[in-house]
Length: 539
Image (cartoon, rainbow, N blue to C red):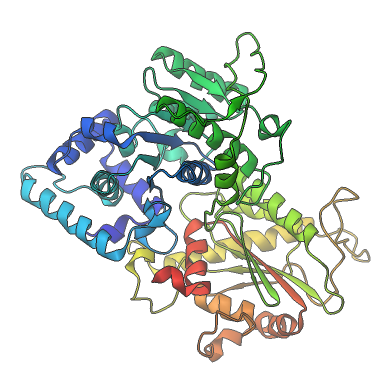
């Protein structure tokens, strides 16, 4: 089994499409894999699972939920995807990726069990990458005797391989949007139907405000199987009469994720007989024909602590390094990119302006699969970057040390052509935005008084300047110009500066008082950047 071949969501999706057939048959196959591994679906009931799906924010919601319950002294398991640097990140105990030793032990134990029980006459005798890791997570959590497991759905819900879970304690659905249309459907309603597939009879479920049509689909899905579904009130309602809640994850959109996490954690605590689950406030009546509102309660000190200390790398993450500030967010859908742009602009707005010297904004971008990169790049235009850098999700050109981050199913030529397409989209967007009057000077502050864009930059560079690098390391070497105190690679190849924009830009970056770098478009790109900026993540 070449596990690395299915490391990216794009590869996993292609595999699923090829194997799809009858989706229900695929779920049954997952149950057979579970049985061959030595477990039955009933065994998973012991894990006291919180099952979470959605399009946007499901990982962040899982992280908030896990951290809140860990604050109660509970031993937590957490299964998520994708990973950023190492595959071990997908399976966590008490918030920490399992050790290399534990991963190796469980990997080979599961692998040998499946090898010993495989039927050579079967078309698929071994599970693919994601299924294998899902099975492995269940084994780890059971053997480590966790008090609960937070399980993030891979893709969709109804036919996702995590949906062999038959009795979760509570389920959650985060904000819905358009993504993975080739597998889940091309409308919000079809996607909502897939996500609602994790509902179970009699198991409480919670969701956040959604557009009317997909919300109606979720309501109908829940009613059909007698699943009590509740709509989360906004975080503001839980803050009334108490201190404002501090979130460990930045960005206004994280408030919705935190509101859902609080409801999921409180429901879990109540279902398991815990008394300290938050005092109820005055309940708000639900409108006729609408979902009942989840309770409004006072978050406990444990809950407040959990929210405050939540960490989730690669999502609205800031790293300050000397003159460089890195903004890392794996947004890859139009709605998540809108949230990313809001967060980035608000963060810039809060930054102190340099007393002297210039301020430079750099975009580092990549997008994979069938996503509409032109639409994503258009959303990034209001940030008014001085340079746009495009590179594949490849940490280094001769990367042999970390198969966890390699994609063995595409060639370098293919991914570089994709980067060229991104660059062409970027250039075209700037041409379309250009003023028809050759004598006019475009304003840096087109947003008006309400804009979060700041003081105009000195006219040292044209805003459409863009470059393509063959790997993340080369891109970072050019962006940092040796000024990041942690990222200090060997001298870059001479060819790195063999371009007018690279040459002139290098001088600008060397002299800038402040450099703001937004890394976005792909979680795998963010993971590659983090691997190089924070070597401890690879240990």
